[in-house]
Image (cartoon, rainbow, N blue to C red; front, side):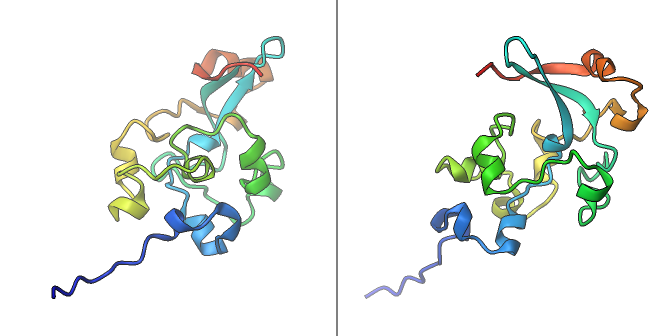
Length: 157
């Protein structure tokens, strides 16, 4: 009789988001940085648009926060991703691991947990690397965001 070694399924395939440890939760972030690019919502239609305006803490090369631990105190309007926000925020990218797992889908091949390499996310089109035109603290007014709209993320409510 052949002896097949069984491999334990990866945690993201067997656990719901609310069952994950803090380290498992944090490892779901692929480092794309897209959630750290500002969005603009049309008050009339509810449409949400992506921009090339980055949070002042986003590192343009690594697409990681420069001060992750203290980000909320430095950038008060930073949205911390937790189970509640994932259920309600409409602008998370379709490839966001938190969104995928919440929707019962698997991670893409280029996610670092699958590929074993943190660079694969940047080798796809699903990264903020190369998309940042300006940082939020370089803008003088909210209207300035409009000139940096790159496309629609999701249509109105």
